[in-house]
Length: 619
Image 1 (cartoon, rainbow, N blue to C red):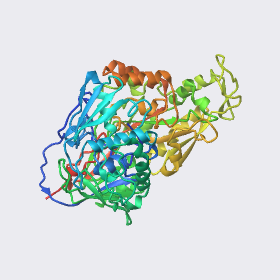
Image 2 (image 1 turned 30 degrees about the vertical axis):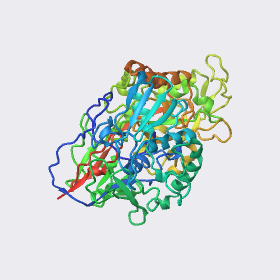
Image 3 (image 1 turned 120 degrees about the vertical axis):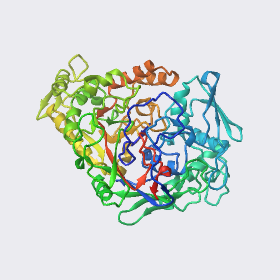
Image 4 (image 1 turned 90 degrees about the vertical axis):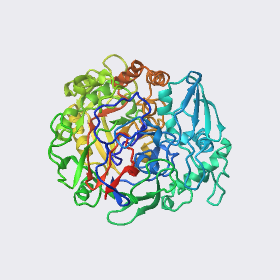
């Protein structure tokens, strides 16, 4: 799971018919034989909307945890212990692309052995057990500074861990966990880190920081690497970040021009995995918005770009793609169907509105006002389905509980202004000057509820990140208008993503916890959690639970998904979350991307993996 992912700035996907999500493995590519002759070399360009990479070190803080920093930047250079997905529509672990062999579980799931394959870093050092220990020790020392940390989970659930051979690490766990969940949502967090990074200064000898062998030495290494990661001007020139084990290395960053190039990658000639890149160069090219990227693709100035809904013919129900291609013969189309959920988060710790948002009936009213079917027709032109819970609604998958499929996929709270108004008026709210106002404070039946003051108005500001696809503002404007019909006043505040960073960590109740609600686009279940359990989004104290939602029942049900592989157990968690509305669900958007016809083997992933090493131009 990952925040921002929450970002249309990453890849969106090739269409998927269905997923066999419970099947681990799948090391082979899911692609057809190429009919075009492979030409060695060439420069491929990918349109990146609105933002550029801002964090190169895989040990990433919550404020930087985004697709544009991970899947389409870090993963090109630094491979996680286990890769997921492929050059196609798989969402399974991909051992062929991973620097480690499949984990071996024993003692009923309480012991895990990790065996490395013996890959090499670009400086000649092996990707070995010390590199895994480096990561684990860093997590132990600095877990609160890592975006993937959830209290009670990795590294808290390790009784011990140690290198049991040059290429082997053994973990002893505090209980028997589901091997599927532990691989997909715990081991997936680990990225081996080279000795070249285990330093406290640029002049230091590789490994001299000794974080790989001593947790006590890690804070000094963390401080140094954090400072290096914050200095984006050195990304392409740093000896540290130039040590890679992935198929690509960075040769340029923030290159001025029209348009600006965010990043330039060239092949890593010492990459141990397969396939080796065919291209001579791969570029992330910056565009201000989706319309500009679309025009560049149509003009042949970029090879891969998102198509704004406004440029697409209306999609017929049941069709995979529009009947006509607005790009003509210059590019092919791919329909997206990402494995994600869309929502906005209320701030349960807001000093004024937190008590309001903590009332389930208020959240139910907010969900009833979400006219998702209407949004699909008017805003998304047929390229969306209703969002109804914590499990992706598309593509069809076994994780989705029956309650999310109710009311044509709208879930338990299908659009109804009348039901929203009735919930509020039956709990002591009356419309005053067009805004619902608490007239019966208190905790008796029919009152507004605990800690809601007399004359409290149901009005709040919804912050959202600008610079993304254009239909976002239209969707939120439609939601604002529907809310107003029930007497709820929503002010929309579009801000650059960088201005929202202060809202991307949970805040304690008090005068500084002032934001009301936050929309960041989507959350894709593409790491570090690939099974759509809810520990990072909904568990009490999680670093990505920005709104500070907390429920003892939710925590218990999430915990049960970690130790059981039963779908019934998972569905109990998912159904509870759909009913309780820790967030307000919004439409799950399809999208269409265009790929220049001259560029081949480009299959965009449901997990946002960016794998340009497969791509090639025809000879």
